[in-house]
Length: 92
View (cartoon, rainbow, N blue to C red):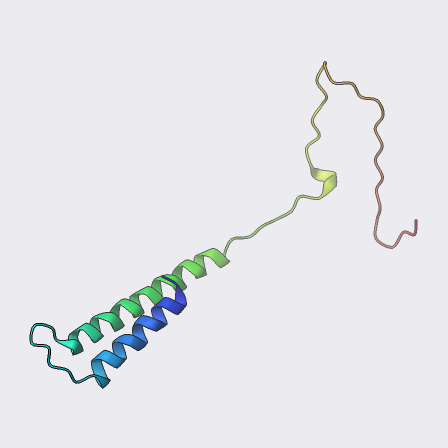
């Protein structure tokens, strides 16, 4: 649902529960307002919980020197291998 949708449901529910005084006979507007507010709060809590779990993920990068080198197959031709290593602070 998202944060925006949850806040919208809470605001709409509060308006229906506290500001609207309508007598529809078959529908109690105040109860609908409370249900909408409850749905908005539950949606907001679930959204925050999912975002909290998402932020815990850690992405690491493997330096170039530690990457696995794949040996060429017999059908591959190796013409020449050229590798340049630049370190910070070394002028080229």
